[in-house]
Structures are given as C-alpha cells and as structure tokens.
Amino acid sequence: MKNTFFISNVKLYLLIVFIAFFYGLVFTFSEFVGSPFNSIKDLIVLSMQWGVIVFATFGLINLLIINRYIFSFAFPILTLICTILTYFRYTANISLTPMIIDLAFINDARTCMEVVSFQLILWCILSLIFSFIIVYYRWKYIKLTCWYYHLIISILIILLTNSFIPSLIRPISERMPYSVYYSVRRYINERAIILENRNTFIEKAESSVDSLTVVLVIGESLRYDHLQINGYERNTTPLLARDSNVISYSNVYTEPCFTHVSIPHILTRADSINPEKAYEEQSFITLFKQAGYHTAWLANQESVATYVYFMNECDTLIYVNGGKSLYIFDKWLDSDLLPFYDQELNRSTQKKFILLHTIGSHWWYNSHYSNDFEVFKPTIKSRVISSNTKEEMINSYDNTILYTDYVLNELINRLRDKKAILFYLSDHGECLGEEGYFTHGVDRPELHYPACLIWYSPMYEKSFSDKVKILKDNCKKHYRTDFLFHSILDAADIQTIYKDKSFSIFNKGE
Image 1 (cartoon, helix red, strand yellow):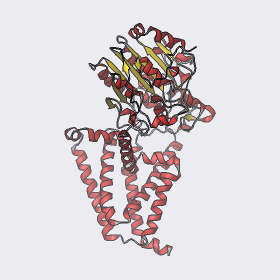
Image 2 (cartoon, rainbow, N blue to C red):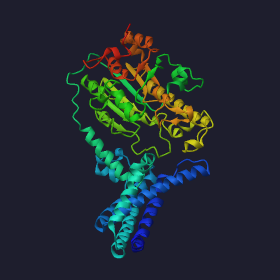
Image 3 (cartoon, rainbow, N blue to C red):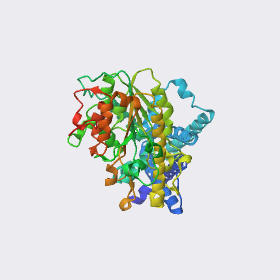
C-alpha cells in the first residue's frame, strides 16, 4: 500500500519539491541576504534555518496542491505577493509588516502608484506566467491518490514548524511565504484591538498650565549600569553627564522584562497587584488629551498587539521605519525620529505631549548606531550570538548607548528654550554574558533594571521649582515602573482622580 502510494505520486512529489526549492531560492533567500556571519559554522547555521523554512514551505505547498481548484486560485496569488515582496526587499530593503499594510491602506492611489516601476510590472508578469505553467502542469499531469495521506503529512509539517518547536516560529513567521499569512493575521488582530471600547477615564482631567511640552522617550534594552552617568567606567553618556538638568534614577525595577508586556505596564495604571489593567484600560495619553494636550506617537519600532491600542490613542501616529524588521541588518537609527519630532514641536498648539518609541539597544546592535559612533572595538561580526566574544558583544552594546546619548541630547537641545520636561525610561535591560546569557530571550535579573532619566528645562524649573526640588531629592529612592503613569501626569500638572500621588516621583513623602 505504501509503495503504491509513493509510486503513484512521484510526479506530485517532484513538483512540490521543485516549488518549495524555487520559493526558497527566489523568495526566502532574499530575506537572508545581508545576514552577518563570520565563519563556516555561522554559514551552516543560517543554511539550516533556510532549510527549515524550505521544509515548512513544502508542507504549505503540499496542502494547497491537494485540491486543484484551490491550488489554481491560491498559488498564483501567493507567488505574485511573494514576487512583489521580494522586489521591495532587494530594492528598498523593507519587509512585510502590519505597519506596511496599514500604510498601504492609508496612502491614496497616487502615492501607491509612485512605488510601481517597469521592473516591478515585468517581474509580476513573469511571476504570473510561471504560476500558470505550474497550474497547467498540476491539472494535466498530476493524478492525486490517497489525498488524506497528503493532508496528514501537510498538517504535521506545518504544525511541527509553526507550533511544536517554539524556536522555529519566529524565523518562519517573519519570512516568506509564511510571513504573508502571519502579517495579515497580525494586522487584522491589531485592527480589532484598536477598535476596542475602553472608556476607562470617565471623569475628565484638567490642567491649568497655559503652555508645556512633555516628552516621553521609551528606550529599548538599556540597562542602568552601563550608563556613565550612573558610574559606569566607560564614557557612554558624555553629553548627558555634563548636563546639570539631567537626573538619573538608577534604582528603577520593572516586573515585566519583555517589550510586549513592559510597555502596556508602563503606560497604564497596571501594577503587580492589578496587571490586567495593562490590557483593559486606556493609558495616560487619553488624560493628556482631556487636559488639552496635543498628543503624538513617533514609532521607530513595529506595532505590537499588546500596545497598538495606546499608539492609536494619540492624535498623531507616525511610523518612522515601517518596513523594518529584526531580520533586516542595515542601519536602523533613532536619529530618523528627529525630523518628525521637529514637526511636532513646531505645531501651533501650546500644550504638547510627544512619545518617541526608540529602537535603542536592540539586537542586532551594529544596526542601531552610525559608523561615527563605533568607538568601542572590536565589535560583533555575526548574527549568530555564540560566534561573538563577550567583549565584542559589550563593545557593540555600549556603542548603542553612546548613540542614544547623542539622540537624547538632540531631543533635549530642541527643548532648552521651552517650558518642557523629558522622561526617558527603557522597557527593560539586557543580558551581557552573565552566566552565559545574552540579549533578552529569557527572564534574567539583568532585564529587570532599566535605565531611567529625567531632564527639565530652565523655564520648567522656574514654573515648578518645588517639583524639581522633589525630583532631585527622590533620585536615589527605589521605584517600580508603576511610577510613570502617575509621575508624568504630575509633571504635566494634570489634575485627575486617576492619579495616585503616592506613586509619583514628585511626591515629597516622609
């Protein structure tokens, strides 16, 4: 029975293998171009990852090809989409994300047509011709027997690569052809979250200030003990260290230690007793709006379902690098935020709240600082973490901090002649070789102590001298990231029943 099954389906197997390898060489390979590696071992690791994606693609094509009607419809569409994505991967170095889908819907037809070129049209035509040839071959030469065996094999392969082995899920879901499905699913999920009815703050907030600019910078993977301003032996924050209006809070603890859970916690009234508020309530952004502030979110990271709702609470939402992903290794810099930051500062409204979500010190470190800031050497050479030395990892990481110092200083310089206050709080820390652990893949003590800085302008100090004095007095105290919701409202002089003064860093206490 088994021999009959395999012999009768030999043409089908050859066709599926051909398509899977075609997808792997033409589409998936484009998403490996530029991946840094430093040895034959690294190349083998990358090749194995590519092979796993080809294997997963085999399962997908095997599933589609069972029914020739479904295959005739789905295969040309999938191939065409992958062709378009591959074209933009090579020409613009962007990949499919929910942000790209969102931008495609937001932009008008004329704007979308500006990215269409003769080369893209040609490749689309060739893609459709190839697809129709394959479909014709499926109809004319493939006689499927024991279709249920194919269904079982397909489901097992898809589940094995997309569910059963967690370490494979991210690499497969972020690359073609599976990225098409996962990106659309994430987009639909995020749209549903954005439309949730979270009428949390019924009692209105008020503020008596006539003009004030409040800036919140959400950092990425920056641990407090690698800041020169906190006593680190390297000059990682030379600009901030000589600014007397910068106050470092070096004893801040975050309970959530991954971006997707820490940001909702930071922006809402969630705490260790009521963590569910991070996913049920609005953020302090709504209270800023109620108090007359124009609110803006400038994103240098992709949207995530856990905090996309808060992004859309803002009056203005700008994706600075909408086509970037963690599998693109060219420069991805926070200085790209500056033109949009200037734009928000130049708004005619007197009261402004601006949130900048930075890429900061995220892995791959070398992407997140410009070449001028490669001060600490040698730096990492391979995306395979085990192929880099601990010294190289720390050097590249510290270079990202040096660049963050520059970006924060640029943000501050634009506020010096305004009544303004700036908060910087990283979402979590980073492992740098402690007990052999690097980055932030698993929960470790190093992840729970993020960097936190506050800067105030001379005009702010003049208007709120008592607040500034308390701010300085409290800088050595221990806080949890629960402080931010209540403190930033306090800093903005917003009066609301939802603010708990006891959590605020502007609270004099005992």
